[in-house]
View: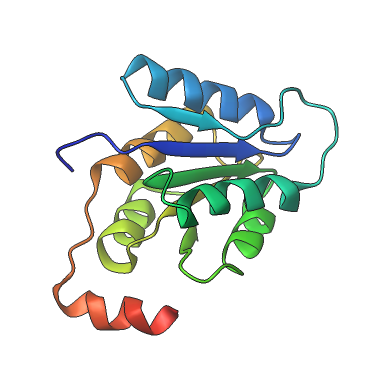
Length: 145
């Protein structure tokens, strides 16, 4: 991707600290971010924050989204309820790369209890640097809805 994608990011309380670390990395590297919360680590309901990031994507205010919760599953489940959202729960660089290249994932979800900071940042780097391959994958992605 030639131009840096604009990113909407959110977490729940379990993912709050990791979200801050990801934001620091992205800001340091010149990415434009929208932080959809929360603003602290007090208990919150993850669907409320996933919805905000999905809305940013569907309204075309951003190019990609990142969601972080304890397992990553809850955020992925909520996000994938929205038509046009393709959220991928990733726990390796290869999984992240394939989610972008083959599935045109537009949201990366991470489980703060299952990936450490180094792996999370590696996944974020792959997510923002990998382009959708298109070609034979287009018809499959179009069937997702």
